[in-house]
Image (cartoon, rainbow, N blue to C red; front, side, top):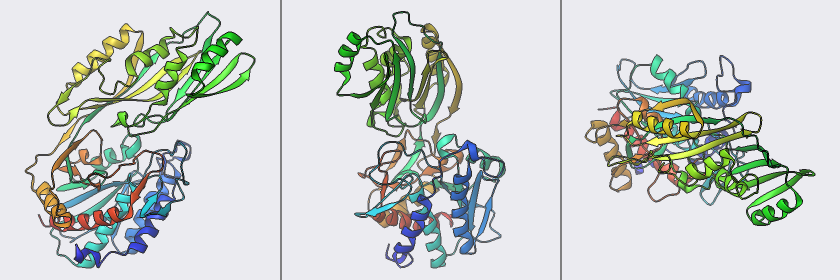
Length: 462
């Protein structure tokens, strides 16, 4: 590790990372066009990274804002090693201790949206490339630092990449955990819809809204209820007062808001889904106790993170249990309701059987499934030479056992035939991706950069 320490400038690293974190690179369709398909700020983040490469005199390229790359290595090399990063981030919902787009460095941590997912690891990878340059290590293959722009909202950037670029010899995504993740669950994303329910008891659910992204646990939910009599108000609100905030809109109409705790959609059990809380509380109001939208949430989704109530629970020995995250909820009394599900499927899951069961259940309850998007699972053999090179690099820097892991997350690694996820969260460290007060430990990012530098030299000489 000492050889890499001599090439690492921590002050410059923090400066560059802070600049990148300051860019509010959330997908924005309002500012999108042909040259910036995911919005102005995402394009700015892409340009920032490419300019760092240009300052070092390296080859850079971008494809109409979908992706870009920085490349190092001999011109005559036919193969390249890929490092698959992304600069887009999820929204910074919830109440933060610091401005999520004005990064704060304190107690060896840097706070900001994207600090660990994935701007911190992206910058660590870039500094690893700079260290390889300074070391003047011989390279047999090229190294390509690929900058994605749509990882959090469909990965269209990498779909474009594989359509336009040659296949990498091997690659890794610094967008998960150390040591090495060689298998990723697949996904089924879908939208459930139901028709409006006209209530004649005098009480009606005017609207219900929660969540912004299917791959996040929603941390707030708000409903508008009309037709509450004084008696109903008193009884229902007394039961709710410690769990929600209630605001009067007019004589008999109220907005009711519940808070939860956000978490990544691959591990919904680590969060508190605000929609679940609010739906259950609303069912306690006379006149809403049989509301089909609320009842479906309460009966089939609430805290059922393995899909048992939906009848789709499954587990295999490679990637463990199937998980279900209900991430976005919208209901109006005029148009009915929608719920977005993000289902993470073990490697051996039968997609046909899972979809068949979901369609049968939802049809029985009067719901319709639409917008189905499938992502197949990903698995690289543990004996692959690239994995062995990463294991040697990890053990050489940390002296720890480089065991192989699996994940419910979806990384860019799945776009390579021989791609894995490699860091940047170390074992037994908190992963705050998609959470309030997201942070990365500076020493961990620094150590990750050393591991990546060592790994790149080994991989580029396979």
